[in-house]
Length: 311
Image 1 (spheres, rainbow, N blue to C red):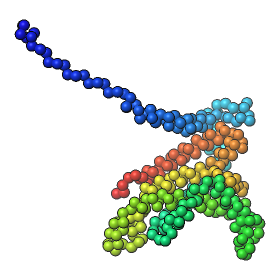
Image 2 (image 1 turned 180 degrees about the vertical axis):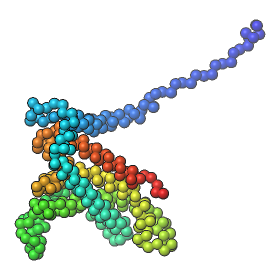
Image 3 (image 1 turned 30 degrees about the vertical axis):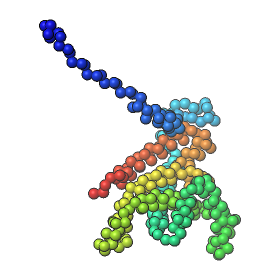
Image 4 (image 1 turned 90 degrees about the vertical axis):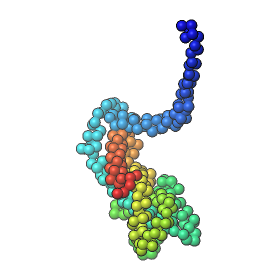
């Protein structure tokens, strides 16, 4: 017993110090200010729109304000023909604008990707319209379309058309005129993104294709386009959302006219809220527009298999 008691017990293993929680929380603490700002400037307005979409809210008629439930949505889908007209025009505007911008942007990107004298200057001229704000772009084209000092006057001097013609006041010409104005600013967006992706294509692929006897058309179809797929899908999706929400250019050029033929859904929402002060109904229309864009974006990404590999 004495000998057993005399035997010394082995020393206990050292205790591991508990890891400090501060290093783990540090990244979250660093991004906390940005998250709070995003919640304040994005989440709160979005939640407010959803809230007011269920309200009858007009500051000029406070006695009518109160909970409306789904009445605003029912009115939009059943009793408001302007909603459907503006929605159809918005779809038409997006399809035509994005399709033409993609076509011309791809062509410009392929051109400025080639080696030629003055390529840097050419790229600067191609990309410069994208640096111009939407309101300034509208002001430029308003002057160009002016019936007294714009394009139509010089065409009339050349014997084409008549003096005093305003393309923005004629229902048969206002849509093409607005399309051209927005193309001038939107094409560089596609050209920039596509050119950036073009420069990452390995030249070895084209050299191997030439050895196999593939011409320029086959090289474009089987090498260039597959490589540009994700860039094209992303750029068209972003631009479609922006064109759907386009207000500044159409508002400055046409104000939605003549006779409301160029009124998009966002422009109708702006007029409903700012001019008519019907913020409850405008919020309901905004919610509908949000759901439409979300649904179309998900379907588009699914069908295009964005980010996936082609089989």
